[in-house]
Length: 581
Image: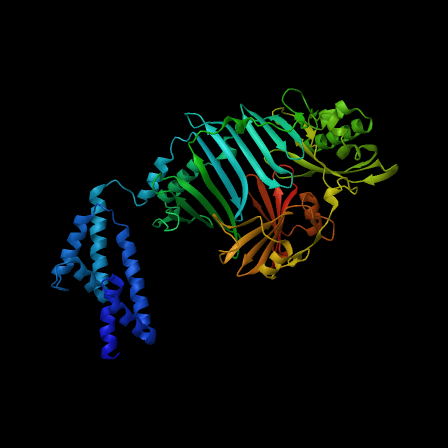
């Protein structure tokens, strides 16, 4: 290092401190443009200055007297005879040893002051404030996420004792709209976007909501940290959003959590859970708090459904078949048998009750009349489906009349224990996978799903630009809690398009493709809307099962496939294609 460089490096600290005149800055910049060694020194010094500034920023604004003590301590150490803060700051900037000494003095002063300020304050002090601030919930409005994609939206109201009064859930945003679930006074109303509303009597739904309750989630995290089951790291508010970031790592399970906290209200605004599934990939579930303890419009809990909505009523009438002394399996088979026999005999009242309380007009619709049996060939073996209540799948074979011809179909029926009517069973009104196409719109197939390779014309590894040329502008671009436009894309993000297809883009190329509509099929004809049973029969039982409160996931790692399964009716909601292995 020559004498000029030594002189320049003495000036770099003044440059970073912002005390050089304009001519001095220009002369210094000219040297930095020509000298790579001094540029590296300036870059390193600036980074160290930012780290030190970061630390100072964490000190409360009312700590001026502490700062004075620190500066006096540095001055007394003989590092400088100057008395003003600016000169002391320059001395700190020019020496790594002095910087470390200054930081050590500051740390000691801050830690001592915190201890003296409140001896009862725990190590997770800021988060304790969050837990306290969120006590006494009366309502919340949240958005849930899975694999960084928006899923369900909830509105819930509570009484003064923290017991749920009523809630609304909107599940998914399919081609016909979301599934809407309403609960109040032990009555659950579920509206299906194809125009069917089901009313049933259920008990306490508190456990179902606990997974999504931000107050409960905050309490549990704090308890895990206090018990030593988790490590918490609190970061300062981010400059772009002004939110506090908290990282929590569990010791007893492969889970890490990222929380965002509003520094003003102390409310948790978002919780993201990342589960390490196999050492290579993570499963993500998130909750975003949109409103907390705000008044919710009463119309949210009593919406107006379309006039032609068909209501399936399991509250005001007895439905299904009594189990009597039959086993669950026997009761399931007998319920399907009697339902098909009554339907074949055109006894729509009896058939409707066995189909869960369906009115006769449902079975007379075009959708169902084309599946009305004329003779039953066989009732299959009941296959139990893992659920919070007994559920079976039964594949049946019978003859129907279609286009003046007799055809054989093999639909799969779901048989379920009736909510609020113990010992009774009914056949689900949804019918899965037959050999007869009923809905012409659903029969339009845009392309083939090839495991681990492609969906239709879209292949893994193709460029983002080629996707845009084919599909045009996406409906949505996002990753985690951030949304983007085509002009400010990050390194990794999701693009969602019309027709239920989405892409995971990393460094400009496609790494994953998601299908949420039945427009793409496998070569075996399966796709979104088919049953879990059919998927397992077609792809085998060498899969990993990941369960959540509302949905389950079948992961065929070696095939590069993930199937999202509806928790209630066990049908495929979404298919994701990625590289195998």
